[in-house]
Amino acid sequence: MTTTPERTLTGRVVLLAGATSDAGREVARAASEAGATVVATGRDRAKLDALVAAVPGVVAELVDLTDGEAVDALASRLRDTVGAVDGLLHLVGGFRRGDGIPGQSDEDWAVLETALTALRNVTRTFYPDLVASPAGRFAIVSSTSATKPHRNTANYSTIKAASEAWTRALASGFSADAPASAAAVIFAVSGLAGLEQQLADRFVGLWSEDAGTLNDTRHVLSA
Image 1 (cartoon, rainbow, N blue to C red):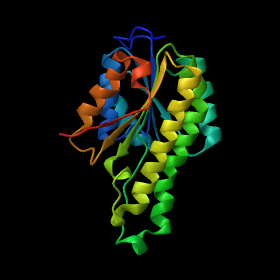
Image 2 (cartoon, one colour):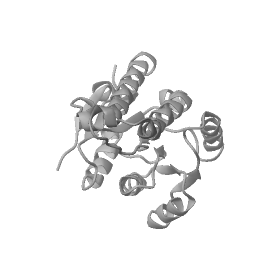
Image 3 (cartoon, helix red, strand yellow):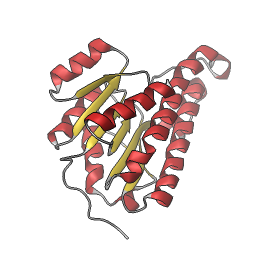
Image 4 (cartoon, one colour):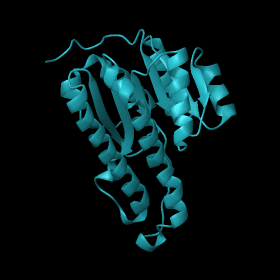
């Protein structure tokens, strides 16, 4: 069974996890222009204020996504105000490299691991919303190094690979719980700079594709 793909985001609530980057701004603008209510999260109030100034109408939420209780509180707050979430883009991340395998420091690992923790928190908390939505969509921005790691980025590539595995597990859940309506996808880049608009267009375009066909797919974005 399939459903007719959405052609608009009007009436949809889209959550951008880690939205204060250039990519977050472009996705927020594209989703807003498509009719969505966009909720942007971040840990820096000044950067969130700048995003709201650049894309009026965005709902800004100052929250630490590595704090599970804070994420649960965010979900409750959104359900009471803008409604349940229909779409979620995970942009939380960072880049660290070291000098070969011995140079993969615990300090860098700890910084990178926060992205995986945030991913686990937001997907576990918002999973019921995405499953209940008539058009639930989840996407993560990963790296091409997840499938082709290098010795100098072993920490980074390992976290990205784990994040992709978690996203594919999420897709497995959607296949069981909402096969006709929910989809989880991976966008992989070698570097996001210069691809912000492409990411925005591809993310918004997820609502124009059939969930069953889209679910558990990986897309490499490039110039």
